[in-house]
Image (cartoon, rainbow, N blue to C red; front, top):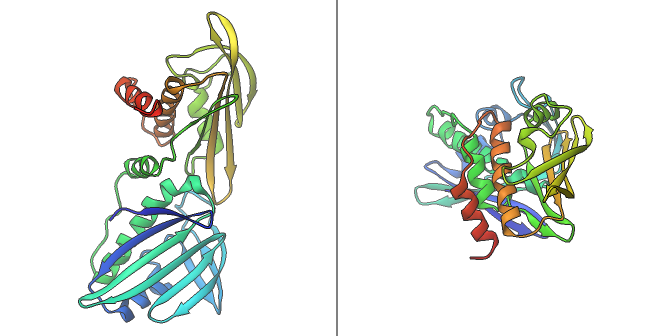
Length: 293
């Protein structure tokens, strides 16, 4: 079952359901016992009273220190809830005739990250079910299609047409700033990199080049500067990397569609997948959607 995204009191909440052919008591142990959690939870968990500490494995894409948390609710074998950093995770176990229904919700602080949080928690819950069943779980071989599915489903790839131009903010998962910058610039430092402009745009002179955070350049119309395009990257520990893309003085469905496609290709490139040629059909589809058709 696909994850659902809801907004509750202004906060994004991911919701999942899983049916298990086991008693609530058994599922409770799998959900709450650190020795059981290590088989499905993304970090190692230490519990001392109500205090919790999380540690990532050495091969994780983030530092090993996963931060602290606290138990918020514990009602065996019904409800277990805790805070992990700023996120709140809640497990509700509902008895059923042939087992139980596990309802998991994650209240997250970073709206952009839910596109990767959803497949991440989906995988964790599938591993939880497999562990409870006593079977071996094989994680997905490819993460990119799963992330792209949820990014599109939740509308996290959509741009906005504002007074000063079109604007996009996209999550780039855990890609380090230096690596993202290399993907964008491909070693180019004295001109606008090829990957920094979509095929329908004529770039002019570079106006800012501040590796690995800001690239800005003029864009031309009829050979004259019309405005600027700015790429800005930011990395927040334990949250990931984002890119903000702005094209000044550009408006309308065609501009939004072109950058939408370009950023889809750019995100795929940061994950190691280079896609060619330019998907013109996808651009037309998006132009129609942005135009409200």
